Length: 199
Image (cartoon, rainbow, N blue to C red; front, top):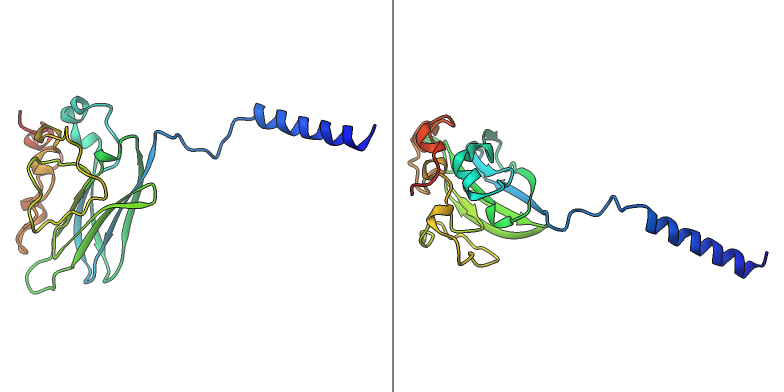
């Protein structure tokens, strides 16, 4: 058998094996890598709410928002960073609220939230105590000037207040420094919180 024929058969065999073996490294193109990041300067206890999994529909979300939202209370040392990674088919569902439970006499933690989509920063927000990041207008109307969300992409034109997370599931942007977590967000089983956005 000649060298040219051996090379030809080798190339043909390699091409056939590539065609017959499905790729395992390729991610589903419909899924987007979402990373929620909290950075802060002073160290504090934080209550975090973020969308960990995408609901199949707005109706499913309204029926049980806490099936898709995750809540964590965390303690961070000065300068420590917190991250959470997930995948969403529609990155505009991404929302991340941060509430500091810092009490009087302690310096403001100077917190910054960030949502990255497929490795690119999509929105970030800094606040002394309670930053909030989202990729659509969850609560209707323009973001307060103090919030200063800086999205990389515009808010979808079809975003309405009905798309909002339960209003009491996300702490207000100006929670007093002496507020407790219970003042900022009701317990997950609270019937008012689970019912979804008002009609």
